[in-house]
Length: 101
Image 1 (cartoon, rainbow, N blue to C red):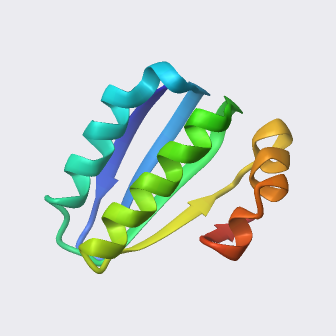
Image 2 (cartoon, rainbow, N blue to C red):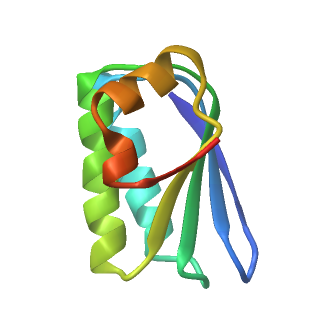
Image 3 (cartoon, rainbow, N blue to C red):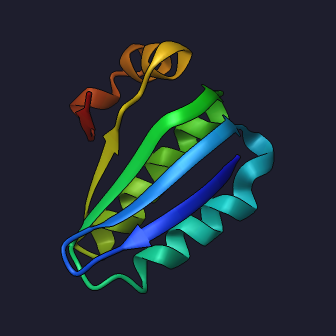
């Protein structure tokens, strides 16, 4: 998985691409570090260009949600599509996180 981020006073957005898998735990650490350095209380993961997410990737999203909650930051997932959307829906992530189409 690769990502780039953009921060304004209102929101921090991380644009994920590629495949989110078990081997991406270092990238998860980088995403968590972003939470420590944002001026707003809104963090959006844009997953439009994410091609695949496995069960470990779903677990990493849960870890990221916990970290955001500890910092009182609202985490949302935006633009899931294809197999990523199916994985999120099967895992009922819409019950845990805000999923924006």
